[in-house]
Length: 344
Image 1 (spheres, rainbow, N blue to C red):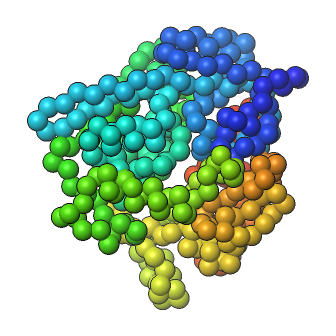
Image 2: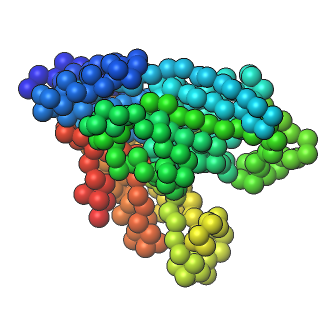
Image 3: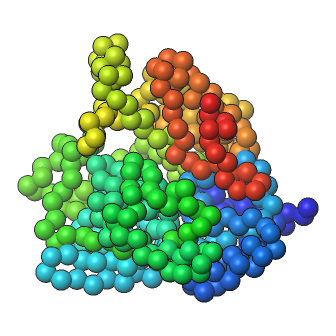
């Protein structure tokens, strides 16, 4: 089989793999038509946004369908601004746009790479806020029935880095996301790095600038160093297990969850396995943030990155009896690979 289309510029890990075909959809109709054409040929289709949360392990034998549906439509009343945003819009550009429009609410989510369409799939979050707190609805197309469906926030079944869409990526494609940002804005400053700010004398633009500085200091720029941000999810454990950990590691950072469980810092666990800066072939752990795996010279293969991830997984499991799960999606020749096949 011939692979004519290079994907290196379409994934932030800069993995140099190829696909049989690439097509770009700028509206719902063409997106559906492109998908149907490949599906009717019996070829796999991978719908891609910014490519910021995937790791290609090998060449892709099917069609890469780029979702580039654009548009930011704003309405407002006395209580809130409502944003109706195309899935192909860049998330960080949307945040910057709202800041310039003096619309607060997205400032904590600055500098998150990728497109708006991916935001509800993994329920993006940072610095004390998740998309689920501001999402009003998600519009999708059911690829098999060809119907457009609107999921309310409650119907999206948002969880930590998860949603109803996460396991339905072969059926639904996100086309628009609805956000609701309250005019009675209150700053969210309870996360490390922001807690020193004065909640009575702070603006959304100031928080936005602080978040940008923190992220630029801690995280590598994908333009310069291949990466997908945080590779692993922060693990959530029960109180009993947490109590045992606290006895042995009293300084371990943790966050109480609404369901009574405890969320830990995956970066802290990795760092305390003395893995920060670890090099594995052409792959490495970022020296400034242990949760980030990098393609330092942009010549690593996907399998090298995956091998490093497996090494990290095993080291953390051996030391803490905690089993990290990847936040990044693993893509094989036919599509997404269940991480349980690699991380066992």
